[in-house]
Amino acid sequence: MALFVNNLADVLSMKAKYDEATQLYQRSMKINIERLGPEHPEVSENLNSLGVIAKKRGFYDEALQYYLKAVD
Image 1: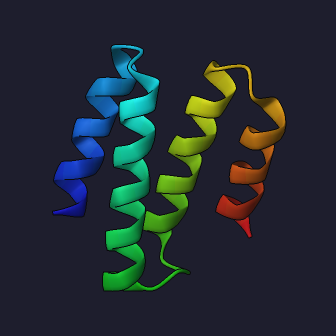
Image 2: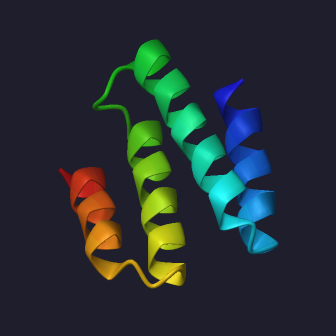
C-alpha cells in the first residue's frame, strides 16, 4: 500500500501538484514507519522525496531538515 501511495505522490510531484504530493508522501511514510520501523531505508526515501518537494517550492531550510533526517 505504501508503495502505491508513494508512486501516486511521484506522479503528482511531476505535475507540480506539491501540496497533494506532500500529503501522500507523508501518508506513505506513516505506513512505512508503522510497518517497517522508523530506521528502514524506505522511510529515508520518503524523507528525501519530501525534501525534494520542499526544495522545488523554495523552502530550503525545510528541505535541509528532511535531507538530514533521511541520512541520520
